[in-house]
Length: 163
Ligand SMILES: C[S@@+](CC[C@H](N)C(=O)[O-])C[C@H]1O[C@@H](n2cnc3c(N)ncnc32)[C@H](O)[C@@H]1O
Image (cartoon, rainbow, N blue to C red; front, top):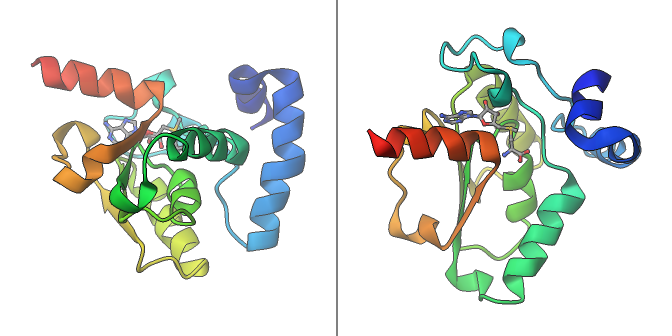
């Protein structure tokens, strides 16, 4: 786990993540912060190294949403996370006034953890969690307003859309 954190974020950010995000998860009784190597996931498509689950930090997600909220009215936007993992970005987004919050995650294991996290926080009514391939997911028009996607899924989608 520490190797993944260190590689992804560098030493300083890895230590900050450990102190803030893991503690935040502990207080809320959820699991979003612990990375998962793709060898531990059974979905056949998740075989490449860059598809492993390494979560965004709460501060990165909040900063992205603050940046957007300065420019658009979130009351008129839907939020969609392509590659939603354990639901971390969905949980943060559900605390903002989006019209709908959706996530698509390929891994059954991560999807199940996301659903458990969302139920634990009683956010079920605000979040639509979908298990499936983002490359074959057609967003509803509302979703298009704000699409959150980290680079690994972005690459995968670009490849899929080129076919
Ligand atoms: C780096 S994690 C990001 C998780 C979350 N969005 C966040 O920011 O914390 C990338 C996620 O994308 C998922 N993923 C990769 N390819 C995918 C695909 N084609 N469709 C759906 N999910 C995919 C992986 O299983 C992993 O959970």
